[in-house]
Length: 188
Ligand code: SF4
Ligand code: SF4
Image (cartoon, rainbow, N blue to C red; front, side):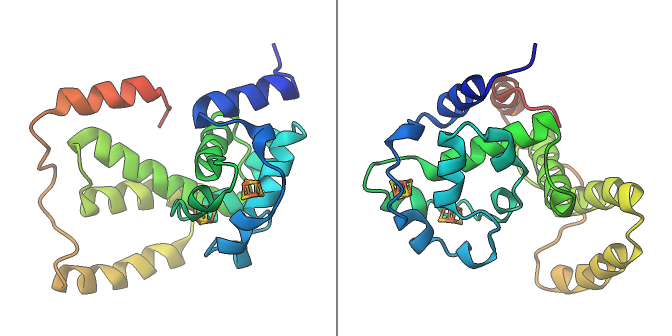
């Protein structure tokens, strides 16, 4: 059964724990957003789209993958709307419905590689994460430049102690990490 606009809006409210209609379009969230200048749909417009039921339109915006999750928008909102959580909810819906824009594919693949590494180890392992990301992204796009770029970056990261070759090194309580991922139920 296909979801109505109202169902989608309810879903966003449930995930984000906020009320979409509380937003009165004052624009403060966009004014304080450090990424506002590169967003095709700034936070205020994202909020408006969700209010009018255009959830999938908002989930398709490149903005939701350009957001830094810095929470400035949520902190500045005079109506206490959890704008950053709304954007998180849209990311989740975007992945579930495969509605992300073509240009966002790289960011989506990187985020998935990051989360898979955390799911496996309870923390990130840079080498494992980079290999996972490159392998999957390369076979979708055959982006040789990206592989070369990472190859050139890796030695610099190793010298600065930002990249470790030890695979795994998981946290002690992996069962707890598994429970968190099971509860979120996001397919990776
Ligand atoms: S700051 Fe709050 S009320 Fe103002 S536009 Fe943004 S979400 Fe809406
Ligand atoms: S959380 Fe995202 S949308 Fe909100 S202010 Fe930060 S970068 Fe902008």
